Length: 412
Image (cartoon, rainbow, N blue to C red):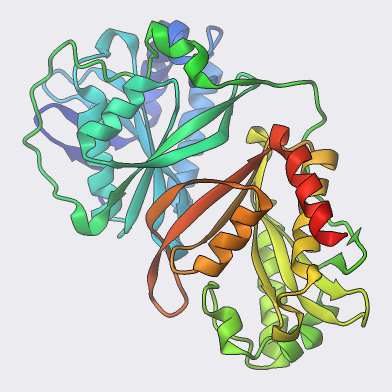
């Protein structure tokens, strides 16, 4: 695997110990502008923080979790910023692309040139199918870098990022591997391109659609039982495996999920064990759905993509046995999970997403009052090899009271 790539403008390479003072100098020089969107680059940024980052990024590289590069001006060798691929999801062949440029080099095309090389690394070395770029709605210059790369704007994810304690909407862009055309014939360095991540004056205003954060305890979802009139959500456990198998053999139930139907009790136990393994990382929290009337296992659901720093999570991986579909159980599950997320955990944003082919699910999410934000292309690889588009929806904390009333009417 290559650790460095170059074109006429820039070279990007894996961070090395010799870069510690270079990173420190660039961060201190740029803190006033860069910290607006990247809080790590604060005015008191220290040499110790620079060393810690270089060591941590090296460990992440060795573990195959993230791939970060320093950006260097090819003709002079000057350190000019950073670029990297993070939030890797190998099972779906996707990652997020981020970049920053020191103040003295803003507006010279550096961000575009470096991001182009990082995308090339992602498609050619990591064999990704999709690379995402998230930019706060007010960060117009970062958005222009994505546009110059040829990334497609797919939608606006509401309250997707929390920066300096404020929630920001984020524009999501994508690059797709089958559409990627690597080239080192980028435009020459010049001023005036406005490509740095520094916001323009007008972008710091109301169009950020920022929501002031109140003082809240840390968002830390933990195993809990949530009980309603029709459904009870219990922390998923090995004891549920037999019940899951009993209702999980219908292939139609699994058509839009990320694995095929359960073939046996041991297979169901493997399903549970894998869910608990992922839950141990803190990124998910799985539940068994219990029918209150019969006390039988009715299905499973989860909190996914738990991001405490952004006070956000997703509700998904929900499935019910055929006999429990089109009952009040599904609506009450959503109600219990949403109520716990907003009223107990203090979430600002709850995401719901579905396969672009699953129109029935899309209509059901829309009936909740969730807002459709966009379609992410070639977003997830299904168990049968199909690469699906994903439709994204969200509910925000200020929308929860109305959604709650709607769900309570459904359940009354």
